[in-house]
Image (cartoon, rainbow, N blue to C red; front, side, top):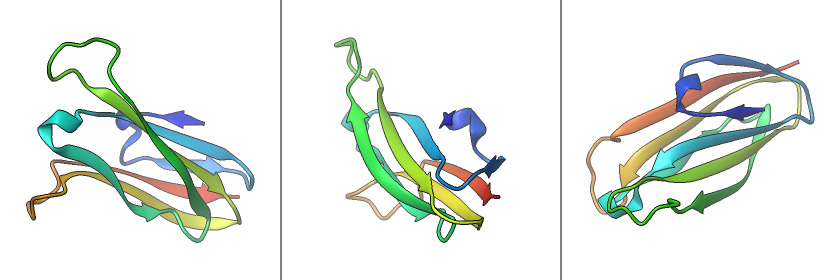
Length: 103
């Protein structure tokens, strides 16, 4: 299953062994990067994450950051990602979360 930022705040029904990809817009030149806060344990486990730079050279164009999760057992968990500046103690600029239920 593939999700983007519009899925934030929803509940997902998944099966054990499913793979979930979350792709979010990210503009590292602003200092903001997506960081994993909660991987959906115990029902899910975080896998890889990768950043794809923007296809254009336009200043400020966002790239795409994709996080992969695998469902590992029945149960529920929260997947939470926040967009923060690593050099600042400020509150996250954006938040993505889904409630994952593995049946």
